Length: 447
Image (cartoon, rainbow, N blue to C red; front, side, top):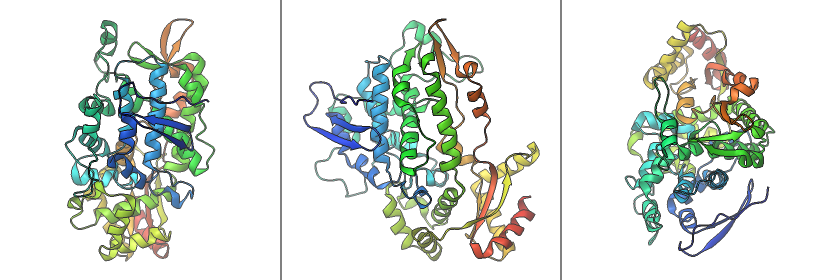
């Protein structure tokens, strides 16, 4: 697909840069977007892996949040243009560009741990950075003369609060009467998101389109193949909804299949999860973790912090450095769990209770605390990727002139809604030498 330059309107600050992206080709960046790219807040994303610790399983997965941010900006801007959106387009594009600047080290790996410690997730942090309530650049680290994100936006005539609302999917262009009627809350229904929110938070959005393409490219798996050109050409903004013309139905189905397979094969790959849980437990068990400024760090800074910490943190850091990973000792499969058992296991969402179970298994198995990990991925799914099973794409049937849900046309979409990812409800991992003992202790406690 030929690339079109992304240009800021006349009157923006001078300067232009071409970035050669591995997925989308050459991207021309200028004006306010070039200033945002050069900001310390965005440049920090160079030091954060897009897929956390997945490179320990997929060696090519060393791409960063900065690359992804450029891709989302590129796709989001194209979709807005194709959908005929002109009002507030720069603010929408800025939201796409900045949607991930609040990520902590290793992306989603520490999302649950930091949320438990601070009550905020990466989306809360992103909004605070954009509006100036929080500075993610460490004290004394901001280069002289470099403005903050809200200063850059305001100097370009953009409203930081509006950009932050777009990032969270809370606002959009002023609705006309018909749009206002269509998007009004209905009894028993969640209010529809407006266009900016749908660009970043829908079943078919710029964020997912880029990370599926990018992650498949860098991991080397063949599942994230999406006909992005077809999708972009067939989107429309109709009655307050970002919809797809019926001619793009096959492209939508391919995206949903790619998403399902990427979650099974990459994002919830068993060894990837063990790597992530090892890091998460090392951070969780740090004394004074909440006051250490971890959300400001890059991946390397966090590893240095762990490597110079207490004995347990040093050991986990070395294990990750040299890929001396824990192994699966025991698992309860999601299929076949009755409702009462599922409710009982849901208590593991409480970090205090889950840690007590980990320590009890360790005690019974005769191993040190911290060397048994109980992975109950439910909470991570909600915090990191609530769109995993979303298939509520609306299809515009041009012949009949009406909107219908994708499920009306696609049995495949209905099947993907109930597909289990991951296939385990609980997984327990431990050192190789203690697997048998940990498996027996876990079976007694959990099964």
